[in-house]
Image 1 (spheres, chains in turn yellow, green):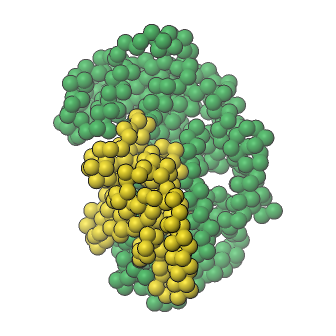
Image 2 (image 1 turned 60 degrees about the vertical axis):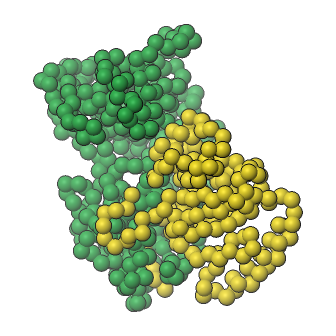
Image 3 (image 1 turned 180 degrees about the horizontal axis):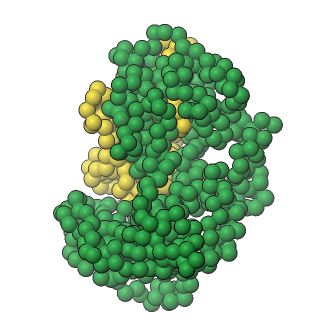
Length: 173
Length: 436
């Protein structure tokens, strides 16, 4: 078992790209060498299908994480996109550090233009923090300020993609 | 990558308490920024993560000893030094680095006895970044606001007696090079009991530049212009006229000397060189005009940047850039050694910047494991090996569960005063609580 040491500060959670599989409408992470987990996936399927039949989780949203991996989840109208990422335990590194208080830009989300244009306009406080976000685009917003609505059904959102080259150039960020 | 799910990560920290600048750097009146401590806590409580506080690397255990115990060592110890002004009078009483002043009001044990003298009317802050604005805001905030934050009690008491009524925040270049971000500027503009005082002449030619600026710079400049140049409407005018404290940016000024009092013991003023700008676009620099200006003041805070220091002779260090020479976080010419954060890139950036940089280093490390560049085939003792060394040297680590006792004690003491916590200010006291 390899041992790593980190000095003087904390490694933020989720530095790992865990392979994900999508079953029905719900994502579950699956670790190859742990057969016990397969059983829990099946029971999650069962409870998931029960839940899907209720009227609550009606909006399907696709999240693409920093490694380009897409996960699909169904959520309740009225939650924020930050709530969704946290509650559904989506594998997005370091999302929502300030816990939705407009004190950081880590819940930065990029929308497709058509969905972006339908969002409620930004207040100054959101723009203040968004302007500091890494990988800012013309269709960026902070996920903690976006409330899930029915018209978002089928929407895909993504976070800035990580720089793939880990071999030698100065290129990260 | 399938390796990552089996890694064990040990964290070594010199102080008994974790979180670094989130605890000691973020201003007391920015509690939301500190929410990230909850995520850090989750990480620390992970089954494969162990925190070891009260261990000074380079002193209690060497980097070489750590490399013998671990497959990989990541140096993310930040920047505990500060850039110096290099002007006469810098060592006079009444002159402090922002690092020390912030450390003082945030309870960093080494700054406990700073005892800044606030019995003067004017304070000059050199530098215009977010740290400079934090210092200005703490100097001018009504004590009623500060008293419910986690600011230390001695700092609160000192600020309650402060005579400081005017804070100048000085930068060597112009308004378009202002280094702070808009949120911090807004906070100054909206600070109760204060009014802005700026030189309109500093802003000639700025308005016409607005349309070519990228959005973040444009919005910052618009707000700055509004505050500095526009005539406020009536209620705001009244508010400003009744405000007892003032703050303002001074542009195109560099320090040349801190002027002593008559008895030569303390700062009584500062001599500033007047600058003009040369260059274009993003790349402009200040050039002195030959003119100087003296400003009377009793407190000078220099906020011109933090600086990393070398941790261990075995670790390469760039004495010019004050960072560890690295490529994508791999320390140059040192297999198994990595770095992240300020010691890797230099001491700028907010939590999100540094967090993303840490992710980059982690990805590099995992990549190296997968490729075999980082050899993980041999068995290494990990913390068991280090514990033996520490025991021999009489050093006892503080575990995360021990920190939780400190945390609990601080929260308890804070509750009695309507504060989120009352920080312990002394390492000895922290250790006593940690090991009860």
